[in-house]
Length: 444
Image 1 (cartoon, one colour):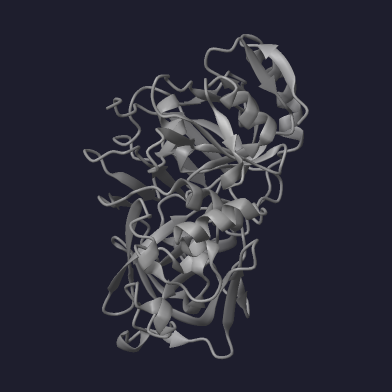
Image 2: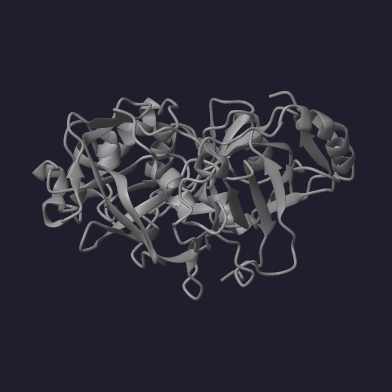
């Protein structure tokens, strides 16, 4: 990773110098899912905005090694063999092949999002995932060994369900695991918004890393411009949703270990009541030809250090479907170098761990690139307490960090560990993403 050491006060200067380059390489481009794609087609559709409050699973018990393996698989990175063997020894489906035995892992989905399918509506718990584009569910077609752990979509009980003849879909992950099945068109409901003839993918089966989460009934993809993985090609649900919205955007407001304030997604508007505090929204354009919510950032800083680390090539995907932050080894070493007693556990494939008590974790800060117009310093801080993802249950008093490394230098994944610290705006129409530092829950 090519980095430049710079004093903290130098960040603004660097952003100013780099800003013309950022604009040069982030020219506006028309989004095939944006307003222009629908101009004049849906003038008779009532446009509105809705908020989905996410119910937090009260039984949520994070499994750090399993989440790390899941994140690596999702993004096509190699899962270390030591981690695979350790998960298999723990009885986790992520370490197995073949059909899943979900009895071995329970309650590992933090947020439950209720989405309605069919006529009359059937309500399923979905993962609203900005890192994928397809909407797929477990159904009465799913193989019994997998289906018995999930609430199923019963297409035969929906008067509006129509099968796409000779249609199929398959999602394959980096380790070769997959889900696959048939394609239907049916009604999908997000609160008061009803989308007719939406593409719903019915799973015939799913490999253990996908099916091993009994709290989850399917994936609801919200990726920026990624096409669906269907044959023949089908319209993504996000594209079908846009004509129903007041504005072509949605917001994400996740909360850390919070029971008094629900996390939420809002579609079609930016609610003033949800944008707490006085921190402004900082927008940055997506990279050219983006399919994911992928944007550039320019620097990182660890609380207590005098210097920023600047790299004009830094970029990351904001992914609600990944729990952790995945960044380069030098970045992880930079952060955990400031944590006394931190070490890489090679028994678990090199996971970064540290003593659970005796030291306050430092904040992790990211320097954002401005969108258009005047350049100002934009820094988002992830509190140190958010960087402690989970504690091991082996009695050693060891914890696992929410920032973990992978094999890409400049490219990273900003998952829920980051998103819980911000109010995020996913602006489809303007091809940009916005973040605001929000008022966070007090440490308990």
